[in-house]
Image 1 (cartoon, rainbow, N blue to C red):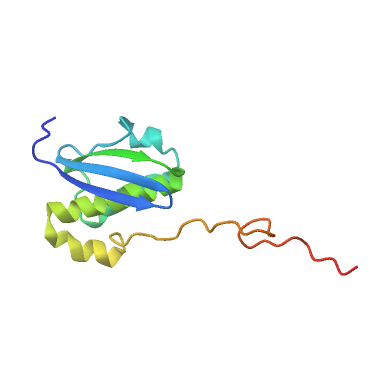
Image 2: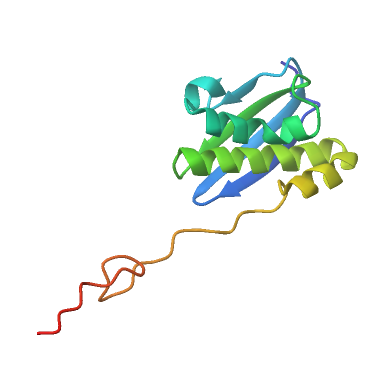
Length: 131
């Protein structure tokens, strides 16, 4: 694998951070040194990861290597999607309107709300007793 002509993108979602590298290749997606089918057994997560490549019709044209850490599987899949979309824009600026229209370039800023004192979770209060 030649490492000199690659583009990269960093994606984030919830607490997960993904560093993605795009190299012209056969269309494999490798996450943390293993195939993404092995890393993400659920079909929804695989579709999420493939979404930017499907939106730009580049499904079999790049070898995508990803290093992802933090968060759970859904957060990691979203971070990978964001990273791939950013890398595709660096590869070809003409992909930007397509990816923007699909909402793939916007960082999903929703994160877990902190727990407040006197409550059981962020908003769940203990049961009210009248007497």
